[in-house]
Image 1 (tube, rainbow, N blue to C red):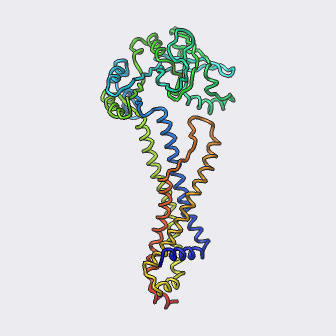
Image 2: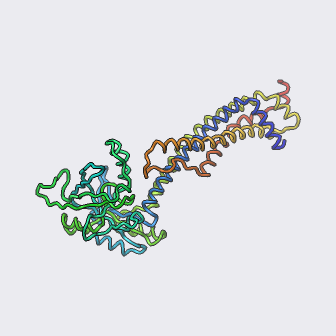
Image 3: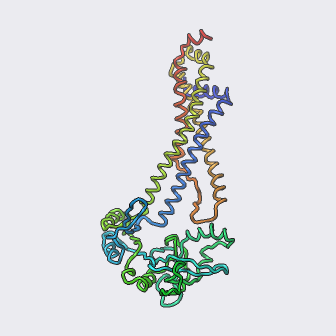
Length: 428
C-alpha cells in the first residue's frame, strides 16, 4: 500500500464522520492554541523586562553597592565595606575599569516646593547626586554641572512621571505631565527641613532654587537628581566632611564586554555587591523558563484530554470497520499496512488540529494584544506587545499536538492490526 493510497483511505475514513473528526481536531486546536498563547505571553513579558533592564544597564556597566546581609526580614550593609572616596580609588585602579561613576545621597532632610498648573505643592524629597556620564544620551546638550550662579539643574525619574500620570493626576483631575512640560519648571529645595522637622525649630536650613532640565530612566525613582558636586557640598555643610566623601552606589564601566566577568569578581573580592545587566537578564530568563514549563504542563494536560478522545474515537472506528479491515487483509494488506492506516488518521487529525491551533493563537494574540494596549495608559513601562512568538515555541506546540495524536492512535492501531481476516469475515 503506497503512502498516497493510505492517505486517501485515511481522509475518506475521516470524512465519513465529519462531526466526530471536527470535535477531535477541535480538542487538539484548543490545546495547541492555549500552549502557543501561554508561551508567547511568557516570551513577551521576558523580552519587555530584559529590554528594559538592558536599556537601563548596558552589558559593560556594573552596579556596585555595599554588600547586604539578611537576618530574617532585616537587611544590613557590611560595615567594613563603605562606599567612599578610598573605595572609588581602589575600584578605579582595578584592571579592566574604564570609568567609575559614583552616586551620593543627601544626608539631610529636604523639602521641595513647586507649582504645576497653578497649584502649589510641598513634599519631602530625597536628593541624589549623579554625574553627567550616568545620564548618557538623556542630557541632549542640556547643562548638568556645578554652576556659579542660578538654579540647580535637576533630573527626575521617567517612572515617577508615569506613576504621577496614572495615579495622582487621575485622582485629582489634573493634566498629565510629559518631558516637554516639565523641562524648565522651577521650584525651591529647602535643605534641613521636612514634614517631621519643619523649618524654624532651631535647625539650620538652606533654600536652593531648582530647575528641571530633563527626565531619565537612569536616575533613582524616589526623588530628584542633581550634579554630584552639589550634594557633596550640602553633605559637607550639614553632616560633615565624612558624609561628603561617602556614596550610596557606584556605576562601574568596564573597558569592554569581555572584561565584565573578571572585573565583577575583583570588585566582589573587595567586599562589595555587584549587579550586571547580564545577571539581571539571566534571573528574568530563569523565571521565564519556570513559567514556560508550568504553562507547558497546562497545555500538555489539555492535549492529554484531547488525546483520550482521539483514542476512544479510533477504537470505535476499529469496531465499525472490522469488515473493511478484514477485506484489506484478505487482498494482501499486511498488519503493518493496517497499523499505518490508523496511525496516519491520527497524524492527520493532529496536524489539522495543531495547524488550526497555531493560526487561532496568532489571531487571538492580535486581538488580545490590541485590547490590552488600548485599555492601558501610554506609559514607558508598557511594552509595545505582550506576545512574542518564536519558531521554537510555535514548532514545539505544533509537534506536541501531532505527537499526542499519534501516541493516542497507537493502541487502536495495534488492535486493528491484530484482527484476523478469517475471523472478521466469518463474523460478518
